[in-house]
Image (cartoon, rainbow, N blue to C red; front, side):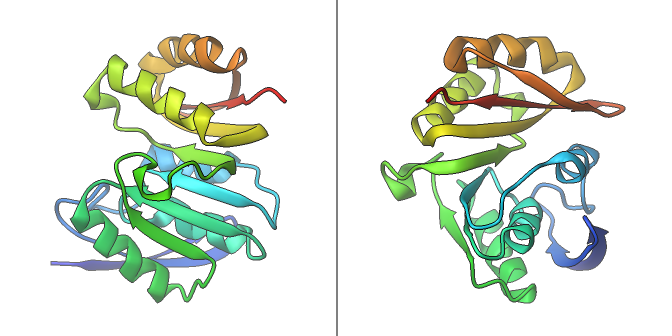
Length: 185
């Protein structure tokens, strides 16, 4: 059974459905909320939400980046279908949702920013691949922002140093941390 939830995020009303089998079926998770509360986005840019789930982060990005464009990516059909419904529910014309294994649906497309709450249960090797793909799909000077469980913060710092040569801790929550890295110009 779908549940309709209305949240006030960054001063904006966001409506979304949740569904069993889609992250996060109970509503907005603490890690994504921490990322939304702390992200910095410039209107008029092209950004991505990698692993979008129900699309909540991407919807907020679309509302904050009204003159720009947002791409939502997920490799689960059920998530993509729900994210499309949620984008329509919020009447966003600047958000596109893709069924995609990482960035496979858009080829070599690059972004100003890539935001993600990557599936940490898939292990270090997968996270290494995600970081590499983010680097490939960022414009020079572009940033990737990740929400990670706190115990994976040191690993993520090393991962970002390996691929990007830099890492900044943006915020700490009770169980999560927000980290970002910039692609060198």
